[in-house]
Length: 310
Ligand code: HSE
Image 1: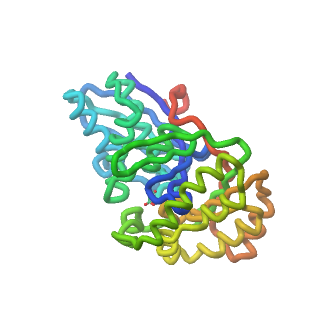
Image 2: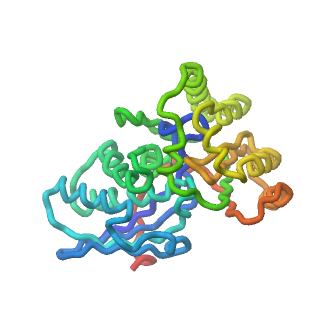
């Protein structure tokens, strides 16, 4: 019994929406095979472009807590064989761990006929994020599961998904990698002053409105208006200003950190010119980087044929 699924990368926060907003991307993505085994131990293999960066010890992966939760929920003592073809660069701020946790939760829900709702699947998949980040955050997993732009309440788990209009491109520039999401969560404040809160609440609302209506002036202010998280995290990334400037000069409506970084994203309303982007990045002294041009993806994780994954 096996199921194969494709799970997509996502951009969390989008500037002011820390842990609340995330957007699914049409690329990159991970393809994941999940097979039920009658006897142990659990097995996991990471293959593909970025497979070598991930642990082969099952209990160290973000998949492990998800499988454990399904064992608890079903009371069954099954084992799994998981193959993950990694197209999403780990630790790059594109929801790599969340995408895999979603893939496994979605596949196990099918294989075991558990009938979990979307909200329950988000909760279970977010358990994997504790491994990656030290605490569960649900924004990336919600976007990978549902697609589109998701707004999630990290306190209650309430979630809504919004269709993103087709006339946007997202350019992602990844330079280096971060120590860990956990570390980048420890550097941010535990409490915020009221003005910063008011600033971010208004910009999150304006961001959602302007993304849908195409009001690019407001979208720019909103995405680049985070007063709480990005001003702190950006200091940890020496490439931050250069990449941001290059994206804006190449025509991005707005640019900001993707998730906890190190990637930055730029939003474009016309097809981005890759040559120009590379030229500008070079001019700004950025040499070693990964450039991805993507469209938003309005549908979430889905089943695929298992041919390519064995
Ligand atoms: N919202 C999370 C954070 C996303 O910013 O820490 C991490 O990918």
